[in-house]
Image 1 (cartoon, rainbow, N blue to C red):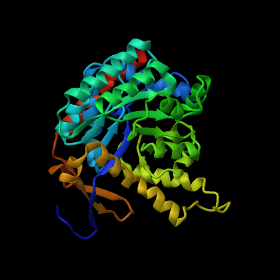
Image 2 (image 1 turned 45 degrees about the horizontal axis):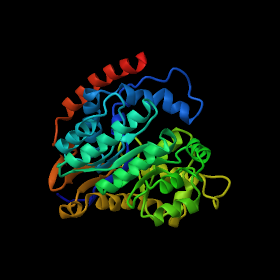
Image 3 (image 1 turned 90 degrees about the vertical axis):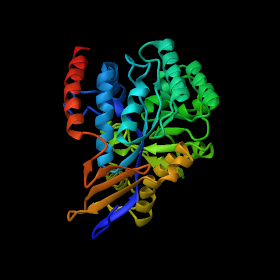
Image 4 (image 1 turned 135 degrees about the horizontal axis):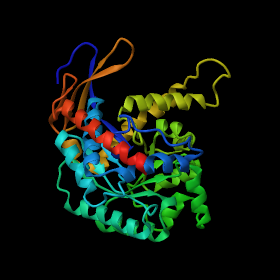
Length: 380
């Protein structure tokens, strides 16, 4: 990589929790038929309709579009949580092939749920996780076991997911306490909370990736850390869904940053995190523009470093053998432009252009697939 005035080479950035299947959402996704009243309503009216409408073609277009733009933002690793209830078998291969083709590292799972088809749907999701884990040989791709969230699965499915993690020797990737409804559901089932439910049912192996943690207290957060688990904070999504700010995650050491399906611009995510954290800092004056303390700013900035540590844990020695790097140029307005991106020794972005794929073609296919996807959603 070339260097110069205002340019800086740094490690590639990691999106530690996202949903590649939502990659077409910026291309005109229709508004819900009414204003959602709460988090469950948002899921039912928007995201669960989107995932049910996905087919192979729209998923492929979404994966290529999302991965291409992530690379242009300097993100070199995605930790993805996938769901497409009408296209389960083989879905992870579609995403894996798109990422491998473009030069994007990705850790994949199917988010097992019972919300559409009960126990049979859960069995199919677990089978997809197992099939993919055993068959995947792609150098840039790793496999995990996924659960959508505790409140959409039975105890039997949670336990089966834990057993599958043990058989495959891989961690779990799951939403935990994103909204209070997840906590209340676990309590109604007789558990202290969703994390405790996972633990008691043997589904919280070391290295597991726990997304959100908004409605956890500091001791619960530390407890998962003692188990060797990773928390992932998703500030833009949490703010958009009005579920709260995950302040208790400050009690954990291993907290990475994710976008939960938002575009994979990790600098934008970090700025949103800093802004939302500043609004709630207890020491701030009552008036004026909120600012973080230096210590708080450094703590939040380490979320990106933690993401790289998580990626190193998931990818093993291969991650450090040919380090992923990006070169960025500072702009007069304080922003930045990503100039070059190298993943596993391969240049995938050069002088700000995607060189591992035809961006114009990817975007054209995405627009065509999105139009058909929105038609299927509106027909539901």
